[in-house]
Length: 170
Figure 1 (cartoon, rainbow, N blue to C red):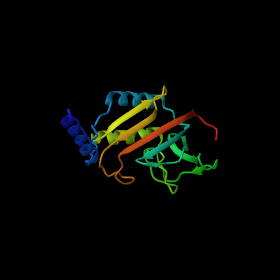
Figure 2 (figure 1 turned 90 degrees about the horizontal axis):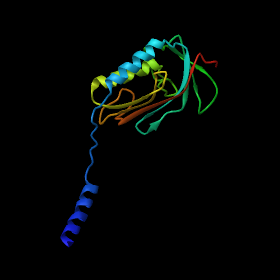
Figure 3 (figure 1 turned 135 degrees about the horizontal axis):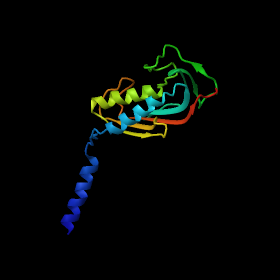
């Protein structure tokens, strides 16, 4: 009995001291994604606003409201810092970019395109929750040891979308 207990204790110490490698099993519900994306596009909602917050690994970005007009991101407000609206320059309906404030701002259609881009690599576990208006409310893209275009060796990217308003007033 003492030998079994000793072996168990040694095993626990060895396991706790070992180098851990986190392996992500790629998974993505393509059928649901395609259906929700198609339903989003059919609605043809062109003028809307929503709050987004995203995390790249351990970096949390500010809560930001994005205003979309005619399907194009036009203005944003950093809700954690002020009520001031900022105009967006050089942003088209299928483009996203970092801005001086370090924000990654995506329209709903751009977010769908970003998810698809990651899904096509087949290296990620992607979890998405959708609203009754067929836009993602929560997106988690988990990957391991992959160099990301917008910063470092991220292991997880998470988007939160809330307070979606059709035809908003500023």
